Image 1 (cartoon, rainbow, N blue to C red):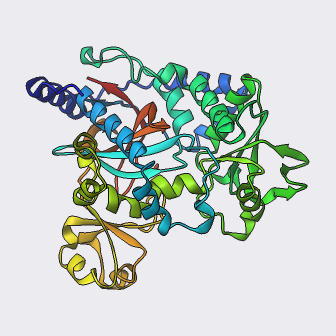
Image 2 (image 1 turned 135 degrees about the vertical axis):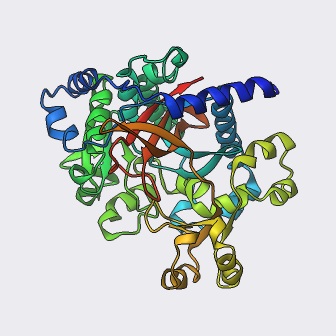
Image 3 (image 1 turned 90 degrees about the vertical axis):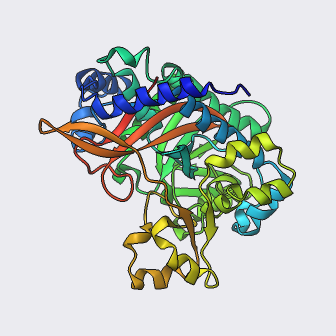
Length: 427
């Protein structure tokens, strides 16, 4: 691993910070974006139908990152993916996973999402998501940008223009990991009530991308799947591969019985799946990845341990640790171990005794609080600060796309004027 030049690193970090604070140019070409989305969806009413009702889906500005910060995040992803294959790590995380997650059918998880805050000391991994949304939308967003500042250099992310081909290959690779050869001919993009999902527009884009590459693709409500004759069916069509967007990671809700049974029996390829979530995205896993002494006891080499220093210290909340965690709560952030989408999360300094009584019974992790950095935006002709996080969309440890999200509030959302998905420019 090359040792970064500390002076050059500071210079690049300063340049990215300065641009995030001072570059208020509107770089999003919304006309170009709308035309691209409608062309890709083959629907001239796509923007009117799906985008105008989501006014804060896209921010008008990009986010600037130093090249060293991006490299540090990429190295963290690669280290975690490597550690996830170690027997002691797998034994630890599968010990608290649901039974259905313990068998490995082969797939490693399409479009993983690694979310980072840019703290005072560089990037810090906040969480890992198995069904990270927004990748297809961000690929189009990156191509709709126009340069405004000389420092912007070339283009958002080198892989943005090849994203569609790469993600198509991801699904076929997942098929081969389980089936050995051939290809998936019919792929179902599966969620609960998909048309009601905020990110439903990207399901339409994903379907079109797959169809253009010779795959029959459908969007399916998980509750309407049927498992019969050793196959998974939707409206009379048997499914080869499921691109899984539901958040019931254990597949134990009644409406997911068909998918659960077909996945358990290996009758359909599911990605990402319960095993992927157990290995990577259960928030309890962060308590292992941030425990340097434990990692050393497993024989993890110093280089990988150093790359995991970007994981903030995380501990399990138990009745036995509750009192100590309550006393130090102002430096902590509390998350449900199986949570997603920023639901039921609490900043320690905002906790009430009533909420704490629930958290202290367990089922939560306490993570060292890492304040997000800020991006200035222009709203109603006035500069305003927005929090930001960075998401790396990955497959098998390889980064496919880098994007950011701007927001106000405790967690990311799409309710903030000036906020939403933002492309990343590397300085």
